[in-house]
Image (cartoon, rainbow, N blue to C red; front, side):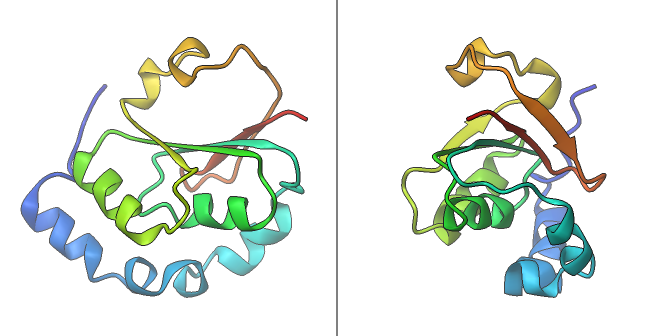
Length: 126
């Protein structure tokens, strides 16, 4: 079911005041534990689903990912993520997670999938 509360002006404003929205991953309470669960991103492709401001995308690129695609239903979230990321090679897709196909991502590659339970998933292959 496609539900987009993020483009609601009140919700978006409140989301923007959260410490993790202002300071990034270092302010996310789960980050220290979650970082230990993530794979080596060197030479990998990463798909970040429901990615908020894109902090995980930035991290994946910093860690050597060759391709990073972020997907979010909200136009406002994508716009903010683009403002925060200085890396123009991160790809942005505005779409519902349930509409994603390999073709919509411009790839026929398959690989492993990991989910941290916080809406962040990676699909990677060498």
